[in-house]
Length: 85
Image (tube, rainbow, N blue to C red; front, side):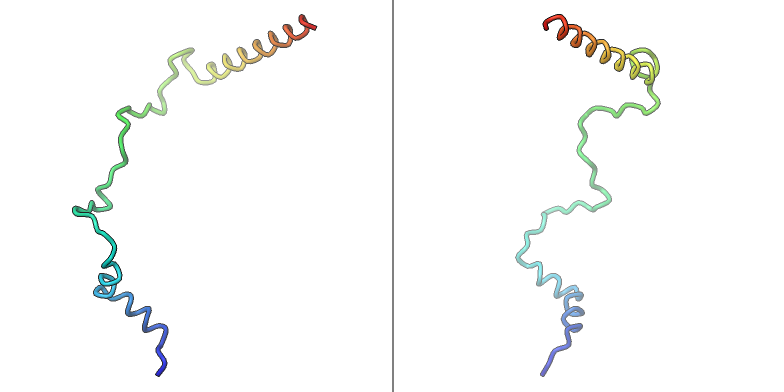
Protein backbone atom coordinates (compact mmCIF):
# COMPACT_ATOMS: atom_id res chain seq x y z
CA UNK A 1 0.00 0.00 0.00
CA UNK A 2 1.42 3.40 -0.97
CA UNK A 3 0.86 6.61 0.95
CA UNK A 4 -0.09 9.88 -0.59
CA UNK A 5 2.63 12.53 0.23
CA UNK A 6 -0.06 15.17 0.53
CA UNK A 7 -1.66 13.14 3.35
CA UNK A 8 1.46 13.71 5.48
CA UNK A 9 1.28 17.45 4.86
CA UNK A 10 -2.39 17.56 5.83
CA UNK A 11 -1.69 15.53 8.96
CA UNK A 12 0.97 18.02 10.06
CA UNK A 13 -1.56 20.83 9.84
CA UNK A 14 -3.91 19.28 12.42
CA UNK A 15 -3.60 20.90 15.89
CA UNK A 16 -3.27 17.59 17.78
CA UNK A 17 -0.35 16.59 15.54
CA UNK A 18 1.31 19.98 16.00
CA UNK A 19 1.08 19.61 19.78
CA UNK A 20 2.60 16.13 19.56
CA UNK A 21 5.41 17.41 17.32
CA UNK A 22 6.29 20.12 19.88
CA UNK A 23 6.10 17.79 22.90
CA UNK A 24 9.85 17.94 23.58
CA UNK A 25 10.16 21.72 23.10
CA UNK A 26 10.01 23.70 26.37
CA UNK A 27 7.31 26.36 26.35
CA UNK A 28 7.46 29.63 28.32
CA UNK A 29 5.49 29.71 31.58
CA UNK A 30 3.77 32.98 30.75
CA UNK A 31 3.94 33.65 27.02
CA UNK A 32 3.85 37.30 26.03
CA UNK A 33 1.53 38.08 23.13
CA UNK A 34 3.43 39.34 20.08
CA UNK A 35 1.58 42.65 20.12
CA UNK A 36 2.69 43.32 23.71
CA UNK A 37 6.45 42.93 23.21
CA UNK A 38 8.28 46.25 23.57
CA UNK A 39 11.91 46.89 22.64
CA UNK A 40 14.27 47.46 25.56
CA UNK A 41 14.59 51.08 26.56
CA UNK A 42 17.97 52.71 27.05
CA UNK A 43 16.43 55.34 29.30
CA UNK A 44 17.39 58.16 26.93
CA UNK A 45 14.80 60.02 24.92
CA UNK A 46 15.35 60.08 21.17
CA UNK A 47 16.32 63.54 19.92
CA UNK A 48 13.79 65.41 17.86
CA UNK A 49 14.52 65.25 14.12
CA UNK A 50 13.88 68.99 13.75
CA UNK A 51 15.95 70.00 16.76
CA UNK A 52 18.74 72.46 15.84
CA UNK A 53 22.32 71.62 16.78
CA UNK A 54 23.62 73.13 20.02
CA UNK A 55 26.39 74.96 18.14
CA UNK A 56 26.03 77.44 15.22
CA UNK A 57 22.25 77.01 14.89
CA UNK A 58 22.03 74.92 11.68
CA UNK A 59 23.51 71.62 10.56
CA UNK A 60 25.08 73.02 7.34
CA UNK A 61 27.08 75.50 9.46
CA UNK A 62 28.28 72.66 11.70
CA UNK A 63 29.34 70.64 8.62
CA UNK A 64 31.16 73.69 7.21
CA UNK A 65 33.00 74.17 10.52
CA UNK A 66 34.06 70.51 10.61
CA UNK A 67 35.28 70.72 7.00
CA UNK A 68 37.20 73.94 7.71
CA UNK A 69 38.90 72.42 10.76
CA UNK A 70 39.81 69.35 8.71
CA UNK A 71 41.37 71.52 5.99
CA UNK A 72 43.35 73.45 8.62
CA UNK A 73 44.65 70.25 10.23
CA UNK A 74 45.72 68.88 6.83
CA UNK A 75 47.43 72.18 5.94
CA UNK A 76 49.21 72.26 9.30
CA UNK A 77 50.43 68.67 8.87
CA UNK A 78 51.61 69.47 5.34
CA UNK A 79 53.46 72.53 6.65
CA UNK A 80 55.11 70.45 9.41
CA UNK A 81 56.23 67.82 6.89
CA UNK A 82 57.80 70.55 4.67
CA UNK A 83 59.45 72.17 7.67
CA UNK A 84 61.06 68.92 8.78
CA UNK A 85 62.46 67.92 5.41
